[in-house]
Image (cartoon, rainbow, N blue to C red):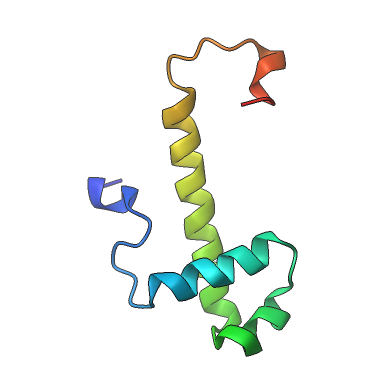
Length: 78
């Protein structure tokens, strides 16, 4: 994965505030079909953003967990 992919908004054409608003609604449990009419973002685009966000969060978690020397019990508190 290239360094440019570490930046979540790299190469996205939509406004970052629209993306964050849609992802916020989705993360709070609002369904994709409910997000679509309020944002105008298609289901397929929402899915791409969700997958990209999940990958980004995974990368951030790996970075933050590096050299923490946590025991298994402590990881869920991280």
